Image: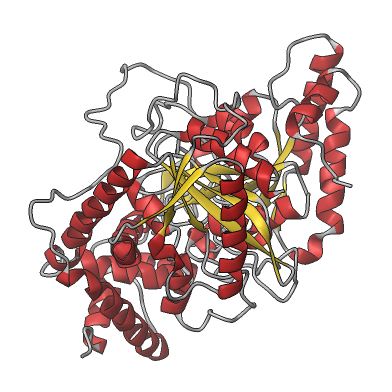
Length: 475
Length: 96
């Protein structure tokens, strides 16, 4: 039996006084402790969580109104600024960082009564696809402890799969919500770029970073999104939310829904057993009444190269703020300011951060800017145009989330390019800024396989509605 | 053909304010070279008549009302300073 009820039911129980928020926090912390050997959690925010829970219980007892997430415990990836525990982004350079304010996403969830109980592991600064780049520890896959949970939101994905809390938050710059959702067997939602404020989230690549929920069901994801979405004066890139509530999902039926199956995602490199699971999912979706056709977006084969120019460029810029002077790792040994910068960064940053900073510096440097960075921005336009054309014909596009199931610990960690290639089916969505979701589609050799659905920019409501219907036929 | 030499990576490290050991320098030269070789894929793509994409929202000149808002206190904002004196950020000497 499931540890947690659907979120709306948990909230009803809290609001009716059947279950206390304090007992939910206790339950979540007990689960975290009992499953600590998976190493999905960096820190718990115990004291603050109990304070907030007691407040919510008091509000219920006094007959005051509580929010739409009243008393619901959740786990935030450790790149969200949160009170009650350090915010480290799983990096040595931010070890001990005590957030002076909270991210907008956390503030909005708290305003609805949700309670953050813990911070989840990630690849340091969200650079990676397995959590093996965490400066602290590697999280283990809930389905097989010899495998990775995916990344970079691997701790959040594992936490949801292990049912440590009803939901978790992740960030997705090139697949970091969807790929671990696929590997760990949970739902991972990547909203349209700009729909959720990035204020107070450790920046990776500012033109593709998004925040999203990781849950057990589409309905839970839609509710959490609904509580976070919309403009924020603290993030100038936020967009208007849709008129309809994301939590009020539409049609249950797939009749008339037009789905384009992405040809490029079924070529070389796709594991044959993953393909079998996805093919079976497509058959079920067809059987449920959807129109399914193959569609080609030829520039998808360029997406990863484009991504690994643009994203390191933005990383090199965003990570320049870590200079050891105002916060973060600082070495007292240097005898002048310039050496203090260099030494603090050299000791504080891990291997992958250094690699990406240097790649970014290279593609932005004089003499190479046009050949790499500018070229990638042009190819990005080409890719976006192909997505637009496809969405003229189809409501959603479909493909696998990742080319394989969860790989073994250490399998790709010696070759960075090999690790980058594990993101081949997720990065294009980020470059285009469109929304996408990974849904559990079935198992291959006991390991979860995710199916990815992609919709046009700002069609989050439609995507979640179709995803919920598809979830219904896949179960 | 190698795209980056050891000296190129040394220069990148200097520009990025990073110090590399000999061993790291060798490793990064090989790895970054392989990644740059991979992204070369884009060189052959025809992008004539296209405009570059710098952002995807289409938003232009986002403004807000200029008004005072409560924010974290000075104490909160200074609590993560590695070194300070009289609530000022203390840094190492800048001029020799």
